[in-house]
Image (cartoon, one colour):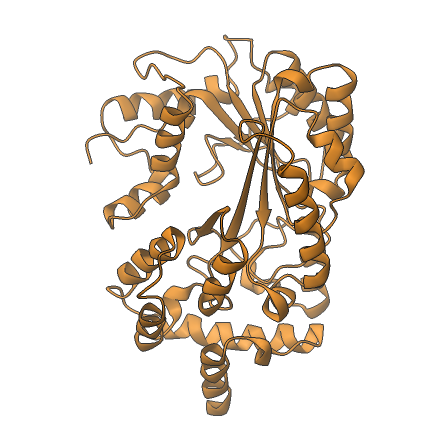
Length: 399
């Protein structure tokens, strides 16, 4: 690999719930750079944010063709012949005609990714307590937070929301072009709603692109109308399955409720030109939904549907890499005739996984923790695809 550069090191900043900052949500965090009010652009002599020593060093390493340690998630994928967030951003910049002068230091930030807090109404099985207040409380009840031992859950991730709101306002007032937020669930977060209202009241919405990742369950017509007052709106909907499997993964959501909100959103989007709105769907690949991807593909046909395999399930017991090789090959056989670009993308990943050794310990952990969560939530894995049900039954019968 001779070209290691990523445009996000030049024009984007991601700030996590606890104040750490990095070029994007996939990269490793830099050291804590609080307090919040100091992370402001427009002050080019600042030692914080995109002008920090860490950012400057990373950019220089990229100019020299070196692999930047914080970006190894992307580099490792590319080593396997797979796509990566880095490559996607390079393509996006070309499509949007955003030119990056890699030989120069940046003077401003084009886009900003800020998480206000982790407040969420769902406890998705592949999520973690750092990102979901609901799941955090759920895991406390069943005393099973050991699964997330690698997460620094002792952080007070929901602090300084007022300062975060002021930071968001300051960045917009200084000419920010794109504001992105995830969660938790943004539609449940008071500070996000206040931010939207402030932008509209102060006429910043007409020159600002808003990008939101949401589980969609709390969408309402009033909020939807406000979002479409912005210059451009990009809504990324998180959905990992349909029907019973959806309810199993995204507890305590109901599929009928999600479907009605999806129909509402589609109707709204259809009223505007493509230049105004981007609508996409993100799915987290995991053992629970591997054999349901074709159903998702059919449900979201005609929309930009993406599957992420490099987020939380990767390296945990939920990763499809823990499945027996014959199970993975069975899935490849079932989708051999698929014309879906997304399904083929996952197939490339599965083919790469087949070349690696399976970790049976993690598969046993998957079964054990599935049983624990089922017992706590009064759910049953028997609602899943028969192949996964048979696999869990096999391991349960060994106990």
